[in-house]
Length: 326
Image (spheres, rainbow, N blue to C red):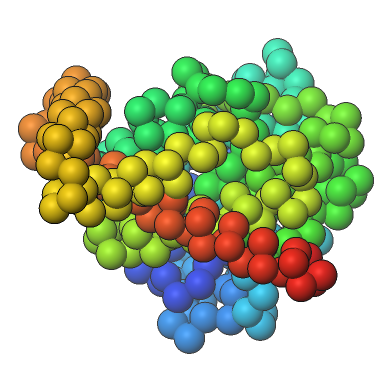
């Protein structure tokens, strides 16, 4: 039996970690340990973690704030498993997750893997809409773990596993924020390790609970894409420009109300058709009309925020390059 180490970095989210730990107590495959890494939080989750001592093989660590990437490294260094699995603290894990992973690895050995995310029926309407927009082909191209996706699969750290050998070879994350998981996945791939998607190893990802929080998160993601560009110039693909083009097109469309009325009408038709497709797709997938309606707002927020973050960090990169500091 393989032994797994679950690494969970936490920052000021004690209310989330309890749901995650409860879901881990319900696993059908029990051969794993849990390491919770408190990343300098003011709102600690130590008492919650200690309350699971009789249900889980769990360890709690508190350290100074260094960001999620280096907090995962902290866990990797102390883990005893054959594989290290990283979850975000806002995830809930289906009872058969480890059984699915273990069975898959038995027949298809992988050095690193990831799985998709989904929404539970108990999630709020906005959480379901955010989950849709973060996994939809119409907004992300399916690059976040779905079976249908553009380009090669690379695990994301909300649901990611690596072998002990991968960590020993790569030494883990070398950046702690802003696309740190993609940089890590690329380096694993370049080291020659076998990486793949386990389609059925999904997690339920609660994500943000308001459009404001969601905007901040996606703005940060947009900046992260340019941060990744600093390390790997060839990783910036045409697909990644879409949110920035969307943001620019939307701004120009709004400005055209007064100066180019015909263009405004054309833009209204184009945007209307695009968001109608999103509404229909969301309705088919979620079967909830409220979620489908809100998916229009979350999809717009996702694209616009990512695009604005992308453009902000692009500007910073150009300014640094011109000053010789990049």
